[in-house]
Amino acid sequence: MNIALKVCYDGTHFCGWQVQNNGRTVQGELESALQKRFGFCARVTGSGRTDAGVHAAGQVCNFAMEEGIKILPSRIADALNTVLPGDVKVLQSAAVDDSFDACRTAKKKTYRYRVYFSPQEVPLLERYAVRAEGKYDINKMRRCAKLLEGEHDFSAFSATGSSVKTTVRTVYSLRLEEREEYGVPVLELDVCGNGFLYNMVRILAGALLACGCGKISQDAISRALESGDRELLGKTMPAKGLTLLRAEYDADPFGNAAL
Image 1: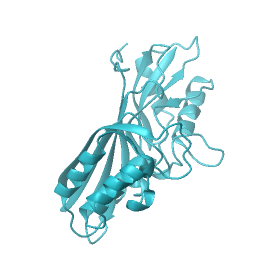
Image 2 (image 1 turned 90 degrees about the vertical axis):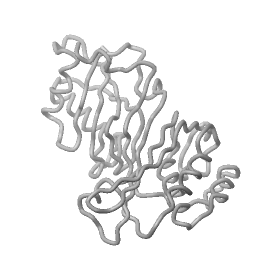
Image 3 (image 1 turned 60 degrees about the vertical axis):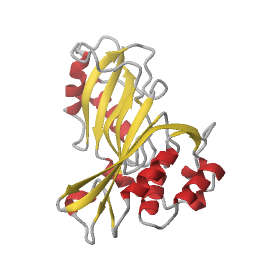
Image 4 (image 1 turned 30 degrees about the vertical axis):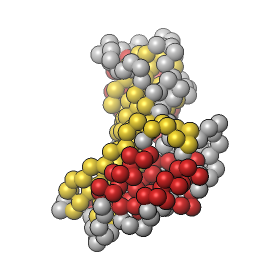
């Protein structure tokens, strides 16, 4: 039986999603929990490989449940949570069609990047947002964001070391919202796309922030998009400000989660 899971995790103490020889990973914790709770080994496939320090509110993954285990698919989440550590939990579980693959069949993924503006660190924000100082122009940032929507070659927005067949991706939406938390301004960048290159969202966030703070121009972002020149953009932002909000599919894999 093919089982889908919706997983939430705090990435602070993880070396990312993918199993590694030396380092604690989300995939490793889930596979260990399956072994402990049900007594079999399974490979858990995620919708994407989040990097070290990146969080997830709605990571989707799937695995093949061994035959003969008597448990309702919707109760697998509860069972796994009894042996999972506190910084990773399964929010939902459901039986899905055998053709469902959390990675290959994903149509859209949405990430959020958070920055707060304060001369001093705010401990209640530090874990899930990055501190910046000074002022920013959100209208300028929104104009730059519009340039990045649509299908483009995002090679300038990718870190070195990535091995992909193509650097062309589609960004369906890139939205910036302001809020106040604990008395300081917080800026949230939500980006939805059909897929993302290595560190792409963190570089997008850095470029938009640099533009909004007057460190680079809108023209520099346009030229980087056209030329693929990474040097025209701002820095890659730290991992802790990034959260995978959700992965979307043709049909909701948890639509029959009560079964």
